[in-house]
Image (cartoon, rainbow, N blue to C red; front, side, top):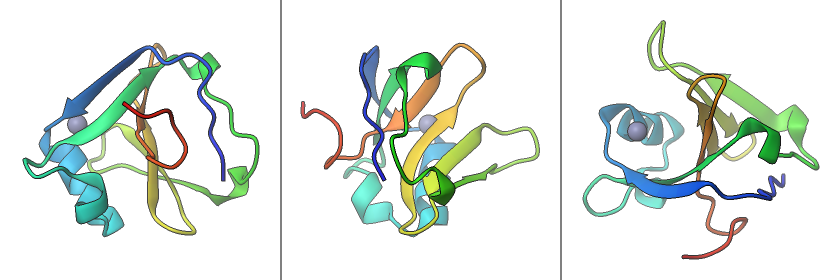
Length: 101
Ligand SMILES: [Zn+2]
C-alpha cells in the first residue's frame, strides 16, 4: 500500500483522546503514540492525497456514531488518516512512507 502526499500542508502532534483510542483499536499504541500519548499527523487537502495501490485494503471505522471517519490498512492495522470534513484530511504519519522531520 502506498499513499504519496504531493503537498504537505501542516504537521502537528495530536493528543486527543480519540486519536489515542484509535491507536488502541488498531493494537498499535507503541508504534503510533509518543511517550506523552501524542500521534503525529499531517494535514492535507483531499485532492493532494493519492493511493497508487492497495485501495482494496482500506478499512474505515468511527469511534462514536458521529465521530470522524478513520481510515486504516486492514491487512496490518496501519493508521492511514481521518477525514475531518470536506476541507481537510488528517493523515497519520507513516514513518516509512512519508518525508521525515
Ligand atoms: Zn486527535
